[in-house]
Length: 84
Image 1 (cartoon, rainbow, N blue to C red):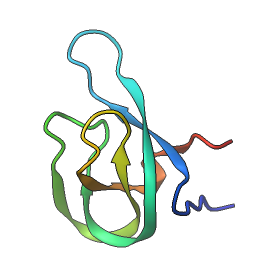
Image 2: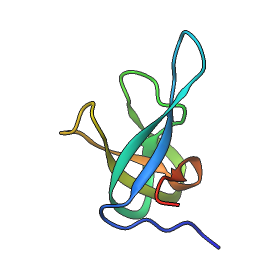
Image 3: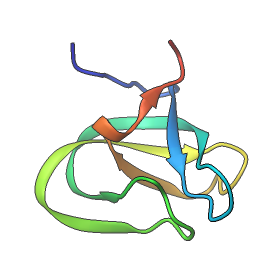
Image 4: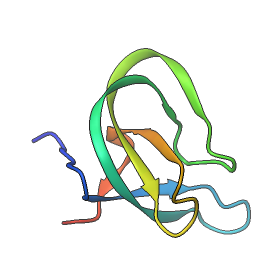
């Protein structure tokens, strides 16, 4: 079964830590769609969307508690649902 996210769902996305283990941060989902521009996982600082060769399912979301004014896209297969 394919993952599906709707507005208001929460996703966990791996964030790069340069000292110690990477961490999973909670992100609030805006929508799910297809795109070829998204942030690669684990997310580096600053998070930067890059253009890729293929179009894939992505989610656009806001990182909770950090930069809540910036909406970024992440590849769907790289995220996990926090709702389950």
